[in-house]
Amino acid sequence: MLRSANKKPRGHAEMEPFHYLNGELHCEGVSLRAIADSVGTPTYIYSRAALLENLAAYDRAFAPVPHLVCYAMKANANLGVLATLARAGAGADIVSGGELYRALRAGVPPQKIIFAGVGKSREEMREALKAEILLFNVESPSELHALNETAQGMGVRAPVALRVNPDVDPQTHPYVATGMKTAKFGIPIADTARVYEDATRMPGIAVRGVQMHIGSQLTKAAPFADAVDRMVRLVESLRPRGIEVGLFDVGGGLGIRYADETPPTPAEYAAALLPALRRLNVTVLLEPGRSIVGSAGVLLTRVLYRKAGPDKTFVIVDAAMNDLIRPAFYGAYHAIRPVLEAAGGRRGERVDVVGPICESGDFLAKDRDLPRVEEAELLAVMSSGAYGFAMASNYNARPRAAEVLVGGGGYTIVRRRETYEELVAGESMP
Ligand code: LLP
Image (cartoon, rainbow, N blue to C red):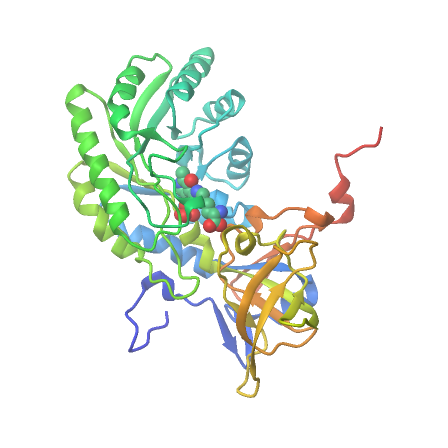
């Protein structure tokens, strides 16, 4: 853990899995150049030590209460990543039958799986009931009825929390804000008592808890604390009516540092939430995604060409928006570091780092000040472990990147590069 005098210790955020060694960027002491030479580029590279430390930081922070970290696997559903976290005790927050399948394949115990999402199909409900998962987070009265019928049809009861929309402003990007009343998510907090009462009368439903998730990449603790306060008051009003709330799911959403943000550490986050939560005597469920995997991964890419336009200099690389869509989709910032350290001598320049895709939106960085990089050089797009590969596509018939997990002084290819044959698998010609 790196600490310097002028910065406050930032717990897990300061765990620096990617570092320069002898002038070259390494991951846990493993050379990124060596990985590129044998696996090729573009490639996602994840640090096992960072994954485990980010998970452990939550466990330490919430140690005063019974709790379970259900990793939000939408952030990165690679089997190697999931299995690493599952072996360290994490559960999974899933949003589809496909994620259930992946979680079970990776060895996540069903008793640690929770199922979120506004549009669960009856087939997905059946699969999750059959697996006997811990909890369904239900987002509407219609979904509750469908789940009740599905469970009754199978002769079982579905364990349920209602996802409550507490109507707080998370102060984040509008595409990832979910806890305001304009969002499609959750049940408005004013309606929840009535829906809970309906739920307790349903033979296929067993009420177990409450859930919230107000947004992603939050950089302040206050919106979380506000929402938890509202939810605690809700729970206190439900209990006298005999509505059982043993599980309190606070969702995910803790931000990470992409540029100069200073998000709360898990310890600071816990300090803001625990005073209210401890009043309730509940098991706290957590659904972090980004803060577990984001800082643990980079996207390694090679410079194909330099191109000087009339107004701009372009650095054209072999990774594109199909590999990492966050800059194009959210205008997100990802730091970019040359694998060969800018050893004093390089002059700086302002460039757009762009991919080969036929869209002007295909960029990884715009108007970015970087040390001058040459053709064939390797670049690392930092903090790409979350919502990187997970949102990758085959646009422009580009095979998806390889994924590598570094750990114990070596590395494993946890997903090999897609082949052309795989691109057309499943298609046929009439
Ligand atoms: N729980 C629920 C119900 C969620 O909807 C999400 C994220 C999480 C947990 C995990 O949130 P996290 O801890 O990762 O912030 N693609 C976007 C982020 C979308 C987040 C969607 N929901 C991005 O690249 O920024």
